[in-house]
Length: 466
Ligand code: MG
Image 1 (cartoon, rainbow, N blue to C red):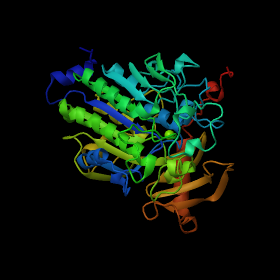
Image 2: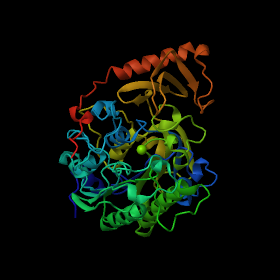
Image 3: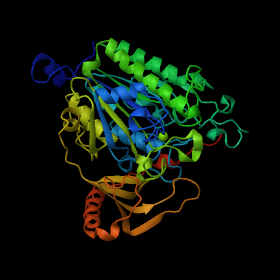
């Protein structure tokens, strides 16, 4: 039996001190899934019965955010509870770690996995990592950052393109697998390269289920970070060409099936009443991919931008018996809240020796009427603060097109939107509300006074081409 921390053991021994043993934790992270791509968020033709059921049995957030508009910094924030600018994982040149990058999540960052491992949890990561490519630098491996099991790809599935790959193949709704050669790892071991991407979601689901079953004595933490619907899009035979939304829909429906496999396993193993599951995506839809990219629904823009479509995501919380069923939460919540919330659930504290940006949202999750005290939410692009939200109001100090040849466009006064009245950010009301802008500026100054940007030398460094 795994060694439990003194506090967790005490909770077991004194009934009533807490309601149950430390819960198992599962975080499921999609890649580039848009706000509008699930049935329960209004997509008319993509069928997501498992996620819809998860929302019906749990809590669905309408205002859930990630802390960056692209993969690497967003994942760093989720796992550490901090804006990536604090960990040195926000960078400007490449925006995300490249395949050749030497940089990685710094060794002194405390991930959710590291925190829970200390509490006696078994910790497993399945899927895309993108916080360091250990093929260049072993210090980037997930097993150096709190996980004791790993199965997946070190980075995005488009990062091992074969020379000669036709332009536009990434945007294809029927890409040819021969143009990519992603490596698949189990632990430190390279299993195969190229791996068959059509089988990835199925294999991720199988590994996740295996991990749950082999640690059903608990407690365990599973971090399942799907490779998809990031492009290029691949689905297994069972899901290919099955949806009116085309390959993008096929891929999302297979991911929904994988979620169903995980939730069904928790139910059949009798773990559902003691497992907290959270589903979200790392950033908004990749709009430049055309039909191969997703949709942010009524939100403006997508991946790569600090408009809502880039950073507001589906967010679904599930813990039958603990989180009331069928609730919709309109409070702001973020991936950075997961670390302090999970720490609380696990009977421990979030790290106190560093600035954390997440807040404990257990009061929202376990009591539908609860609220939490929250400062402004800041929208960063790289190391620059572009926008901030305070209550329903969002001010854009800088805007910039997500891709292409974008130039930052400063705004003084900032653009101002009331996201409750205007979630699509269509009507700038800055002229009518100077007092709101003053409040947001004060909140931003307060936040920035706490930020000491970390220079992560390796982050912009790439290995010499072999
Ligand atoms: Mg992504």
